[in-house]
Image 1: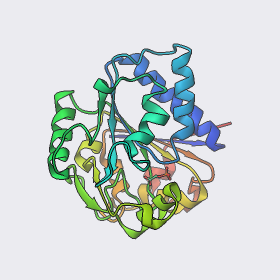
Image 2: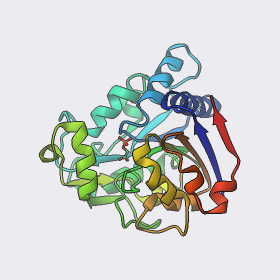
Image 3: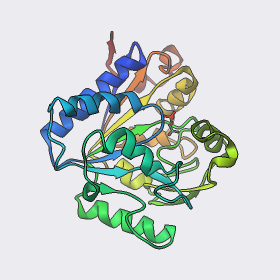
Image 4: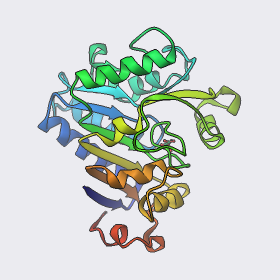
Length: 259
Ligand code: PGA
């Protein structure tokens, strides 16, 4: 187990650092399987990654991008489809072709069946090498809503009020947010060979504290990251709980403060 904490001065510095970590992983393992979050937090890191790709810093022709979650009942071409979001901000800028994208739209059938096909496809590709995650305001990872446990598999979940409200800011209003989603299981996420958790903004400070402090609990699914193999948390100063952290494990871990 290893948890590395990195605090940056700004969101921009967080994004540059994250893009550097992801780019280095792609350069080291061109066949990499990357589970990639949507949401606002990784957007600027993806932008820097796309720029690095254009300057040929690494080869993306063999990498695979795996979708983290998707709304139920939303077609791939719906404006709210999370796969469309991934394509715009990450998949297309990195020139990853469709054959190297694992999504919840990869199979026909009901959402349950899609979840099974999704899991089987990830397994066939050797599992996830790098998971790029945001932190839900309620502590969710993907749409593993509280309560979620490490053994929870890829499945359909009912979104919590908190997630519906926070996702409403992406689509206009709460009425535009579907009530259910398919999410990569906690088991898939926690088995990733490396995990990068990106956290930005003062509204995430308390949930980041609960992610790092105290006992891991289903009420804060992200707290189970402490039990995963190789986790790097990059937080900007606004999100960093600093003196509010009680757990010595978190507070005493070497912290790299970047300009
Ligand atoms: P955000 O979303 O990056 O837009 O804050 C994170 C999440 O809800 O998982």
